[in-house]
Length: 362
View 1 (cartoon, rainbow, N blue to C red):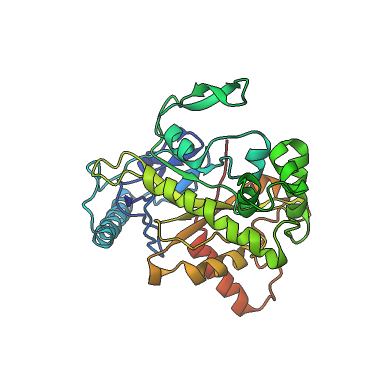
View 2 (spheres, one colour; view 1 turned 135 degrees about the horizontal axis):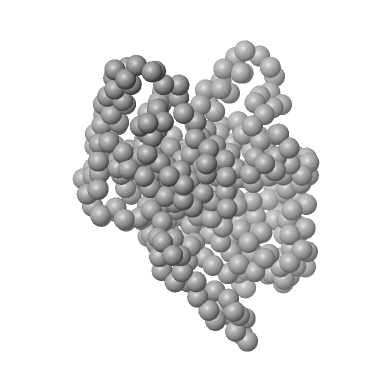
């Protein structure tokens, strides 16, 4: 998939981003994600994503000479990152590449029928539909026909540059077991309620997320949740395939799709959500959910075991829905013994895994 290069301009006079579709993004062509100090390489078209009307501007010297020198260093570092990314990808850079800057616009929080909440509210779209919609194609929409199918269609007025379908990792297995007619659980009371949708279906899953810590309460999952974990592989592979098929690998680089998911808990009814975005299709066999990793550092450590440089896998986690977290989402060192060693290790992981935060969503 295409790789991209992004850098935030430090001075207001130099900044050239603009608002659109939730994000203000300043970038420099589709080659390599550049973030100091890690110089993380990502395939993001615009992956220093600064949401809505909020952008953090570094302090700028009044001396224009210093400003030019700083920008020169940024460009040199960006070009070096691009060369490294091109070498790693083994592909020529995109035709619209520029060593200076370029803005791209997209969405990194998209749900389909694979998500328990979207399904409960009657969403029928698939990951493939979501990517088609993002690219400017029409997809089925209301009104409903007599047989319950979508009789209308809907189309975005302006195609996006990049998108990640981020269905909830939680209950992917339950979705599969309850929608597959060949599943032994299909006719269970739990699955009948799940398919019925509405408030009852939301309560069915939401109660598990609101426990403290969030705990899988599903009766159809078997001992140790083995059945649900095994079933979750099927929709997860479909999510990966949809992202791969939607991505434009040609020199035109007209659209970039990311493999991703949402890590979603609400312990004590305080949202604890993160969108996890992967650099490419080298991803874990299944996503890590709030049930396996109740805290941010648990998430990072679990992902680090299966997503590392050894298997050409890299990811970012983006704090999401902090406005509904009652202050818990970004609380550092939560439940960690407050030793200096723990604080240093935690800080290093957050710096590497969460160099950005969502400020606004639709």
